[in-house]
Figure 1: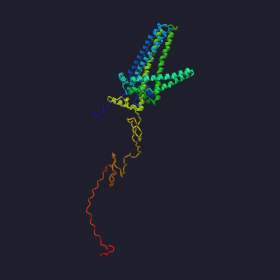
Figure 2: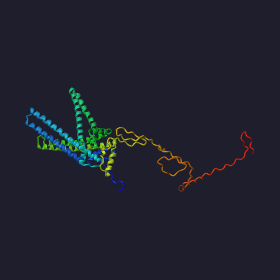
Figure 3: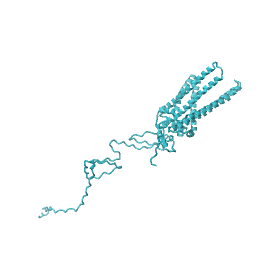
Length: 461
């Protein structure tokens, strides 16, 4: 074996590219994701919602028939008849409320499984239903609590505004009507705004493993600068599937009404008319249920794609996903979930040359000190801390620059000028050493002069 890693094939592509994408990609890939793993996405959603819908309908019908059938044995208008009527209505309504909440829990389960599967599809993985449930299970009760919290908040808002309108209407009827209309119109943009800001809460809770409060905060932050694109995705998908549901239900409703007139033109009760009506209504409900299942899958998929794109732009999630894919395809095991890496960090492009580097946040939460910035050198100027090149009397052969500054060479005789042919040039011969110094020569006697000391007798020659 060599020290180099073995060759590995190119990484498989997921349902979206591993870099920030746009509005069109989110909208288009939300529908394409159905083909990636239809058994988990569409099959699971269709089975669960169909079973839940049928079970709720049968249970409510059974309770209603059992409670209202007692009215046939009582005299209409009597006190006992009125009491049984009120009790039957209350029992049927309570049953519908409880079973509707259970059906809502099944819908939350479907959305959670879709979120888990789409998050795996981003990194080109096809998890089984069991794997998707293992990711969802720790936060499933939190998701139900979040749904109940949102429902309770809307009930309180509607009750308060409706109560104000009713009280004013009892005092001044026109004012109450106008105020009620204004409240109803004001709830439309409020609902759109709140739904958009909380659109990513299930994705955050499932993929990051956080609670309800942290999920709401994270969704609020991630949609801060992406409100209109997120609202556009949510609005287009909702309007599209609402239109499809109307296209399916309206013709069947018209057909059932026309069939009643054709089969029983005199209005007589006939078994064939009743059967035809029930069959048409059942077909319409099945079509609407199928559209609702697809809508849940597509809307949950779009929420994951918006979440991934927002984290790519804000936190650099695309680098974590790419590193995870490369390590997985290289055969490494025990990898950390890439969606839980770098949560909450702030990512920015590399600073330009000459700008001070940006440091990561300090562990204590405060800003970390940044290193001082060094000015960029101008063309032809040496870097700071590097000595200037000494002037050379003649061209020298190219040589690598030393790593550290070198002391200046000792002053000596100038080297000989090399011949014009560079190939025959050789280094000058070294100078022979100077001979050792001998004894000092004797001073010759000075010539006799007539010089004498001042004030003394003249010197004779």
